[in-house]
Image (cartoon, rainbow, N blue to C red; front, top):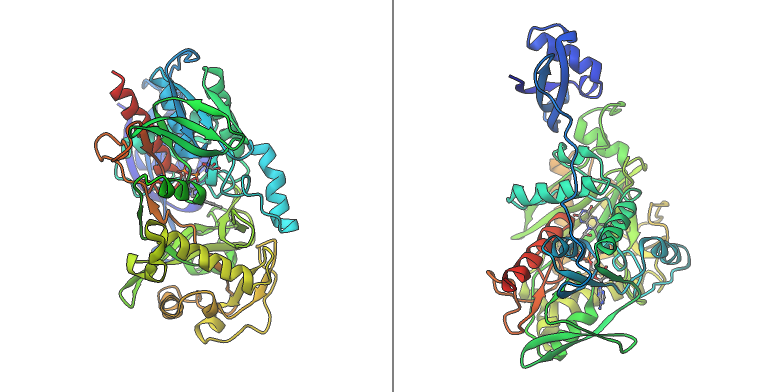
Length: 519
Ligand code: FAD
């Protein structure tokens, strides 16, 4: 019988098949030649001690034991070109995985996306980075693949439903992601690899009879007697269907405004907001791995930190080892930061959102906006940051210790944020209570991670699109909107996901719920 083993090895052994075989042969007291194959089931790093170890879960097949290479295949999709149509608004992870699931269930998705396809999108990313021009339909948040396309592609989630997570990871592998994502404790894909996977998903949707419309912005939802009838696009075209998955993401402010105007029930929702901190990757490696040089067998170190400060959670968010800070505004007149990494995470800098959880009462100055109060609060900070940094895509920046001491930095070195930075006292960007928590919090972070609190670290503001400021309420069992029949609020924008994997899971769930009603 093949043997399953849990073991701890050095990074060097874990990285080298022959060394691992040799090590295991000694463990199970056989000669290396007797080992036919080693399958790695799980891999994680244990950096708690000075001598870093890699935890592995493996299965060892000896010669003569039954072993077969398994290839992860796509489900057997059927042609749905003449099946019942379902409108899916948004081609982010929620929309794309909803579309695939609809096809699997024999329904025809019509995916409507305001942005361009992944290739076309690149030009607009260049324009925002180099020319400070924000295209309101094609940017780091909008376009094929949604906000996750040009990201670090971290694939971990707090979802406890392992089966659902594994299904999405396996679909990603079937669409070309490395099988490593099934094994790593903290898998990620990388900006350079995601676009091709997204393109292949789109091609599969079309191959099996679905439709994908780019450059098509939904400007109205047709509703009669509290039932969905279809949508209207920016060119005035109508697309009719009585099932609609609304997966427009956390940045589609025009959709929240539309729902509010049409008196379709939405509610304000707390989210988190703060800054994006950038350190050298070398410094983060030395803190996390307790060494001067991480060596060739360890990956660039991530970090995750959370503290309670003045009764609020302050925590790292979307940390990108070996990554770059990206300009993620979706309208002119605002600045927004987030981060991405290539698959090798081989850039010299490490960045992370450092955010504070907000409460509904924080939106009080904006209460006249009702359900949009949180969104207006978020917008006001992004616009103030834009103004303070000089009304381009440059962002306000400050050295970390200077910030904790309320001191404008005398200079800001070049950071990975391509549009550039302006030295600003960050306290001006945020309401007083938020700046105070951030100042205290960075001092606390410095106590837990020695070396983290340094003037070599540069803060960029704001990190404001962490999750949706609005929830579109739905029935917890049927996933249908509480008031509008046939409307399925979905993914991060509706308040039911946070990240690529959970958005994809939610997309699949909405598709399954629709199929249920059609049985
Ligand atoms: P979105 O991805 O936001 O997709 C919504 C889509 O709807 C967009 O394509 C948009 O163009 C479209 N849309 C909006 N309005 C309309 C309209 N009116 N008509 C038609 N289409 C419309 N998450 C992770 O898990 N790991 C990461 O490493 C990670 N890194 C990130 C890095 C960056 C730079 C950014 C911006 C986000 C990152 N995220 C990451 C977050 C992640 O991308 C989102 O959680 C996820 O994409 C949400 O999926 P979604 O499908 O719900 O919404």
